Amino acid sequence: DGGITQSPKYLFRKEGQNVTLSCEQNLNHDAMYWYRQDPGQGLRLIYYSQIVNDFQKGDIAEGYSVSREKKESFPLTVTSAQKNPTAFYLCASEPSGGTGADTQYFGPGTRLTVL
Amino acid sequence: AQSVTQLDSHVSVSEGTPVLLRCNYSSSYSPSLFWYVQHPNKGLQLLLKYTSAATLVKGINGFEAEFKKSETSFHLTKPSAHMSDAAEYFCVVISGTGFQKLVFGTGTRLL
Image (cartoon, rainbow over all chains, first blue to last red; front, side, top):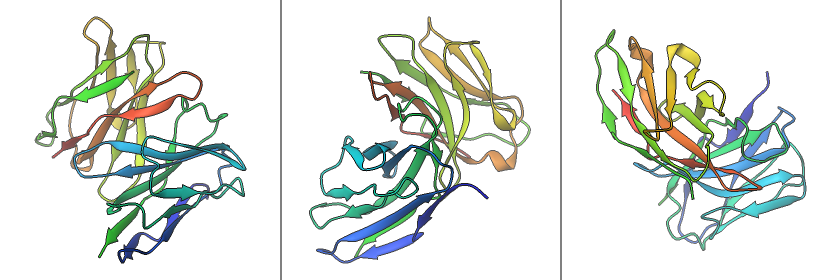
């Protein structure tokens, strides 16, 4: 059963803590993406990776970090430098060379709440 | 830069009546446009995409959209709404050269 999985589904963070959100795909896709979704807004791009061991900042990368050590995994760390991290986080992957122009497949999301 | 504007934040319909979700785009060249759907607390699913072939695009679940260059519009329609269509819908345009990122509208909630 192919797809994208994200864990955990819900995550609570205390102020000053770093937390890591997991994203795994078994679709053999080259490109992976992290988006943030806030109420009443569309998705905004945090980071993307077109190939293993390479990643680029998106529009709102401040306070976040990523790694891409394996093709199937693209974890996102929300650091204490992110001042307003409460949001719904979505991971996506894309089958082509990661031009962004092909269909993106989304995971079910992680809802992060800062206490 | 490319952008999209979804003209309605909420649209209410009764089961069996037509659905119209409006989207206008801004682009300096012929754009690629998408509609995605998101059910509550779920990821997004592609409904349909336009990539400069036929201007009337048919998608999944009976949805379709028509690309109208003269009106810079890409409205999403369905002849007869079903309860399972209740969700949030996003109009998306591709922006940029080289790496082309998705630019999302603010969404329309279909009730």
